[in-house]
Image (cartoon, rainbow, N blue to C red; front, top):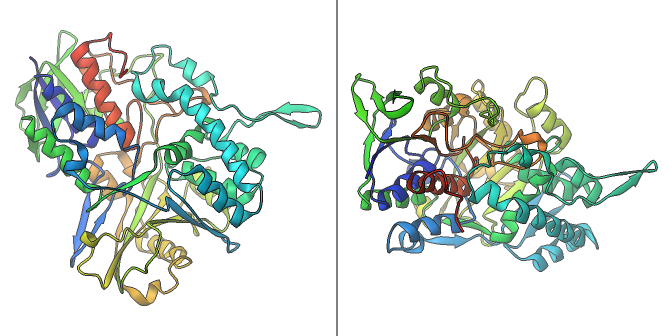
Length: 498
């Protein structure tokens, strides 16, 4: 079997490494930092513990499949999965508040009817039926199969079956997610609920295609999960599985180039100039890093999906609070912006900038492992910011804390200290320029939101992780690992999981 060099120890890269090792290959992972997990990092201080990357797990079946395929111990024996219920709580500027049950259509309909009036729940439920159709149409090509050679078909076809409306004697359908909210949901708060799913991935709902409806559908259909101890525990479990399968990790090792021989990847060059030979190279790095490693060689050809660049990032504020978490507190609360249009224009306008009053996600896990004792609470606040945001981080954090105060009225009195994680911290952890965070691949929009294929123009060189097909997000990272492993083990005829 071949020796395989994997560049980076992110979640997609480790998923590929574990699967390739089980297939009998000798796998070596080279990681420039001193730890694994990519964006799944942990911050600890004074007995408090916080996730600084993703903090909730959608579609856990992807990671269950990895553990089933790579060993006898299932995922649930390696980490403790907790279904989050309610799935989310939402707070609006007009005082409206509601909580949505986890993976319960009837419960969600009832909650929305009670908070927003009769028929609101039915409109959301009808939307989810249409979103399911979009999911069914795109699940395999966007998650389970290698990117189609004729990928333009995915960009041309809008899979979301928008409802036709007559306006000024003309029939029209929603093209963007924002239009879906305006035309089909007919309530500004329902529209904000819908758009918040796109915004959480750094997407502008005004330009994101209607197919982005699959984002709230995934959460509704498969539930939202938390890993006891934080999602860093999932990274630890995947790392342990790799080690059990005899994957070798070399931390603190900078790769400076991909070595080619006769037009094929033949190894990696280390910072000291030495070359480690390999039969295959798997690169789990951002596009700019891959360009540098390729030394100017064209990794992607004309007519292929171009790498995405300039994605948004996130600002994370970690709060250590005195006092116990109140009983019945929701794990996740979305405090919606007071002026959503102003927020979107700030983030996605001609000159992107931090929104003064952003949408803020408040995470209050109530996990005993995250606090020094029961008389304290660990809270994480996140908001979307333009990539490259760095200056005035404390000022931005103050804006975020002020918004969170709408959900935690006594926040200032309880605050012991806070830490700020900026896009620069994301860049340090992942290598992505400006701390950009990749969004999941979406159909339609001319293919603008697809990601490059896992295969490259260089034989034996594959890409994995959020910056290649099928894009960003923990489920997508896991699927990218499965796709790369399948392409290497089974060859170009591999067509995905069945």
